[in-house]
Length: 162
Image (cartoon, rainbow, N blue to C red; front, side, top):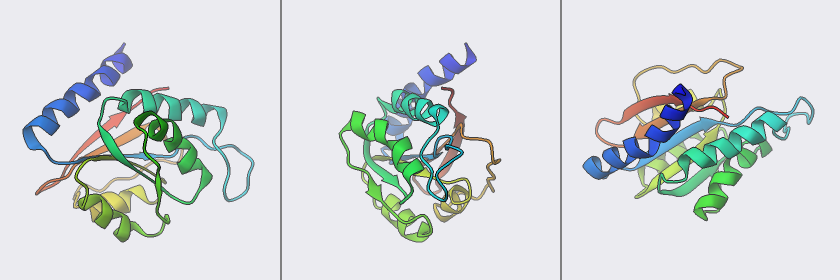
């Protein structure tokens, strides 16, 4: 029941934040669980696809107008259900171009989803002005880093089940 309350509270929280602040909200997640085969660019596992569907479900009312992914299959597959639901074609940004992605995100007028990697998300958060250091354990695919763009930016850390 805790998970249900969290899932149901995200759209309400965003409505309050967006109405009061009118600042873009950026949802940053790590790609879903990856398959054990596929070399350097594996697809998602069955669990990863379930997580991607769960993400689309919880973000469906978040007024996302932009979706950013890296060149890797797992980020694109994680973002696909959300992008389809909000009728947005994802923008591919190379995983190592954190500064360029941060610039694009700061220039947004609407809310966005970014699907990245466990080793790139901490640097992206820092580039967006989040002072709190973040580390993502290897086996953790459940975090939603919600950045409210502003001066200063604010970070909410949430977890989502699948």
